Image: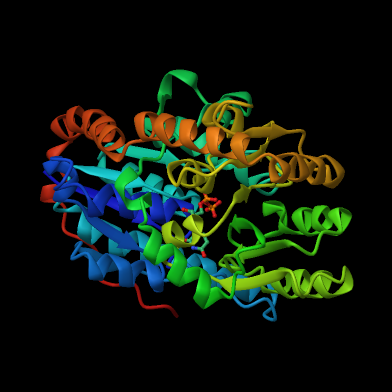
Length: 407
Ligand code: UDP
């Protein structure tokens, strides 16, 4: 039995990192269903390289890169349509040998829904987003909900927050199953020598209070709010590591963050580290993790990663954060979008090292119990297994169409 995972992105966003965790450790978690999976990608990039490194069978089909903005609307729409047709054709060829389609991103859901209609295969939509106008366009999220209603057998929601948004926008609650992202806790236990070495490489002095912010650069991820809070604190002993990069065409936001850092006079306190693959090691160098998105988070992997690293995490009192951590016990929740209150929370935790230690230690134990990859993989296998058995044999008899040649 094979599951065909569909993903639109070549970049390493949260959805792709979640899928990598699911697939890379499927043998260790004993999930043969996931161990035999294939991945179809619609664009090339570091995600494909990581799949290749992990020896996971993958195929590049079509190319759903955003069309160039300098082209006319008509040309852009034409390019989009051509690449959509190519992706559908590519998936149809691969779907011959699979029992279940698994869409991991919104555009993958669109392609998956078309293929589902053509083949009758069951389709699972793993929803990593809050489907709302704030996160998507005015019509896009409604369209996705309709597709899910019409074509998805099950919708995996990554938090109660994304489940609530899905249902309030018209999605069917009985279609959804809540499965949190899973992690391997041992990956976050870093020996002191490695931490000391990395601190030295980064030039972090021992008398500095180090805050880590790990998110891709996008305006809604709120790095600018954290810079504002830092400026309010006027404390040169605080050092901020901004870890991440613009992954989905928000390059100008990275530039704006650098300009803002300079304008606020924070250049000596902020390090831009770019996109890194050594997140657990970097987490270990921090005294405090701040996640301050300006919009509700659907999941926010870094909050759990910070907890697993035994660090106190400041997060907003909305979206998924209140599900992941409990205020004063396993983290620190504050009202969202308020740089003044964020500054106060940082000051409070900076001043109290025993509070930080207690929060971090309790968080690590709690996160290891609640967000273990073994549990996540087991839940996904249990959800997919019966669907694979029901799968229609219709497709096996279909001859896939020849590759589409654009006019
Ligand atoms: N991350 C990473 N390298 C970086 C910055 C972030 O590997 O330089 C990871 C981070 O550890 C987390 C993920 O990117 O696992 C982001 O997760 P999130 O849930 O915020 O997903 P997104 O909204 O970015 O898709």
